[in-house]
Length: 132
Image (cartoon, rainbow, N blue to C red):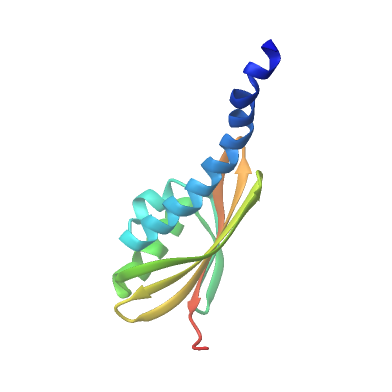
């Protein structure tokens, strides 16, 4: 009888990491909508694989922030729609957004991986959204 009393608490402790990861995907989506590169950069791993339109490279955390800042200066966000998320694996998360800017629509995908017990953004891709 006593053991069942703690079951809800135990269940909550197991579900917390999944909820936190979902929040990370949504937080990054919100920061992208706000063009808040400083907050997005807090999630960057020490090296980030970035692909913006036709330019792909691996950049340091600081370089990644500058590249993203340049993109947002040229494409001011209007809205973001979270299309897809994978957060069933506690070590790996993936999000896909449609970013509407003053210059058009972009498909944004990002990958997070757990590094030293922290979810870090390891890959960011921004490509022109193709009409259906």
